[in-house]
Image: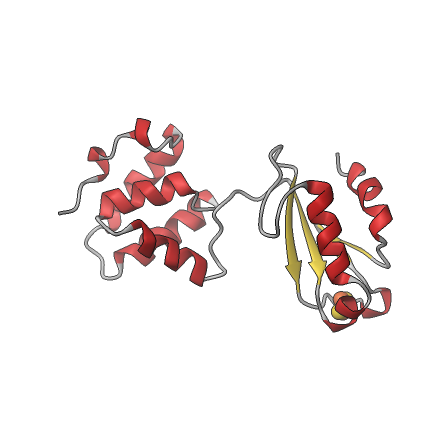
Length: 167
Ligand code: FES
């Protein structure tokens, strides 16, 4: 038997009130729609920017859908995020030219310097780390995009200094 959004206590899942308000509205307005799980997850992503583990638990309880199913949907579609995006988005190009000229080494180094994995955001919410396809600047490989700025011929030893410019 499913429970309503009201029956899921906020103290057990640590949602902030604004998030819960948005989720309650989304769930109430869409509860009877076909494919309600996908609808609710998509609207949550669009309106809150991500679907965090507490949000997943809340939606699971409110819709009576197993958490494993919700997690499966979120991990299947790259559209979904489980953590917020930082103030600066770092995209390491992994197109062919950048890959062969050191892209994977840059991924390792960025993860080390930022102390996060790909797809994650730093604890201070400054940086989100991701990879991307060719950004059209192959002659400058390896290329890293920080927000809308393409940085070419990136060397692992320059990464920490570059990041300080975005402090
Ligand atoms: S492969 Fe990286 S810019 Fe083209």
